[in-house]
Structures are given as C-alpha cells and as structure tokens.
Image 1: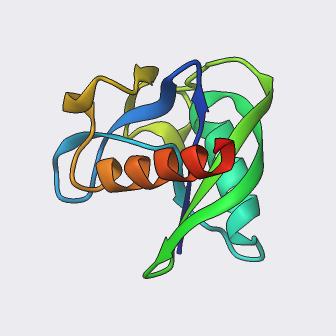
Image 2: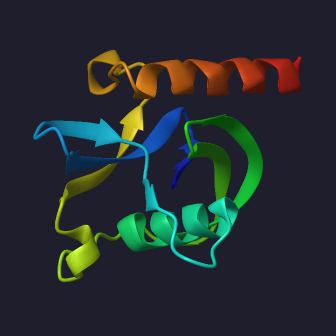
Length: 126
C-alpha cells in the first residue's frame, strides 16, 4: 500500500524528484509505502515529513486505486528540507514547489490527480 499527498500553496504544488522502480527520474507527489500498523493517513503524514520536512494535516482523501491513496493535505508546521543522509530518502534527488502552470513537470500519473484536485477546489470554492 502506498500513500501520497498533494499539497498546494500559492498556485504551487509540493513535489519530489526521484528515481522510480522503472528506472526513470520523475517528479512525484511526496509519499511512499505504508508501514505495518499505520493507517494510510498516518503513512501519508509520515512520508511527507520524511521527504519534505513539513508537518501536514490531511484534509481529504482525493483518490484511491489499487491500494494507492492520494490525499489532499495542508502544511501546519516545518520548512522545506530534504535529509539526504536518511536511507529512506536515497531515491530522492530534489524537493521543490512546482508552479501549477509548469505542465512539463507533470506526467501521466501526476497530471490526472492534479486535475482532480483542481476540480475539487473549484467545486469547494464555487
């Protein structure tokens, strides 16, 4: 099971540049494997903290498919920091705030989720 979070602030989304299993380097939403005795929500919060330095709270489950949970989250504390000394961060090259208009950063995995997020926000804000 995997949990990831979409964190948007000032028209920018928090992302990590990382190596993925298929060998490519991609921009992803922060997240990763859910550990034993963790809920998907707890896994998402822990993974975002480990990969970006931010403490977040989950505001909504955006999407769930094939045991991959994508949450909408918001920052409650912390600052952007990637601890490359930690073994669990060895696949991560960079963390950054990516402008929502920077479409070349989004791929066939992240773009549909981002579109779903933007639709949710539009509905919420009327």
